[in-house]
Image (cartoon, rainbow, N blue to C red):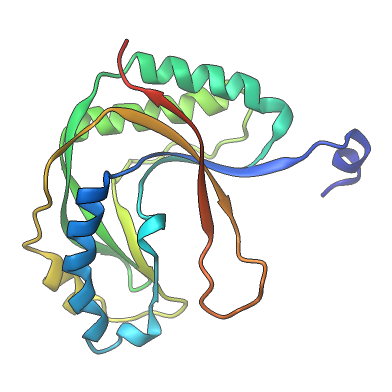
Length: 199
């Protein structure tokens, strides 16, 4: 915390906007991912728990709490301007040899537009945002600190087609980073606000 933050007494929350898959979709994906834990190299991956599975729309980082009222208002506006759309978990992919993810199918144009709106909402609320890069919807399954050959894992997920559902809610999620120092401890996620899509 900077001296200026300490002087003003402002607090920060680590936040991101997301679409959260419903329980049946999570359970179906959990069943599909379970055999991957037996593949060679699986032990070197840090697997995310099912409670952490989500499609991130925009990552905000540490947000000053004084900005939250306007952020809430602008995200609510973004949700109202966005109609519900079909979505399902589909296949898998990787970012280099460090991140294994499940992909998405369905209303991807609507999902990308919602991502753009949640990014713009934060920027207009005064949250410092990096330049908005091309949005690739993904649900992170595992990470590695070193490069791992993830091809067997992406190959195993290649044919996965999840149950379709209607994405009808924009969620603002707070992540609590591990503090215990226990190896392998996962961040804890807390939905702090949610807005229905459409009017």
